[in-house]
Length: 110
Ligand SMILES: [Zn+2]
Image (tube, rainbow, N blue to C red):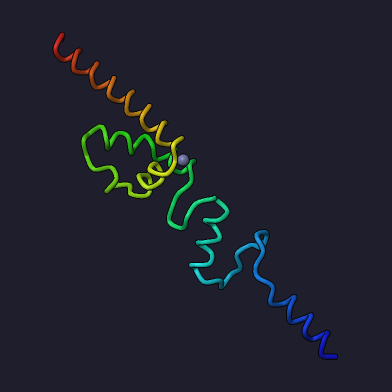
């Protein structure tokens, strides 16, 4: 029965659905793009919670006047595209700057 073979072939050739989990032996690129689609980011980008955990260090590097985007390019990339994380970074930088100004005052007074 040829039509039955055709139907079986159609079903076995269906493209992977969103619910399918990455299989062992899948090319790394496929797994990476799958992980990216789950997180709603492009391959190579990182998610908000990852940026959140790196934010303190990123802000400190910036406050020291070092090139944070060279040291943590993925964080920079995310912040460029994510207004929420950008706001958080700006708030953090403002706090660090305020502390640094306090230190200056303390040094001058003392
Ligand atoms: Zn974000």
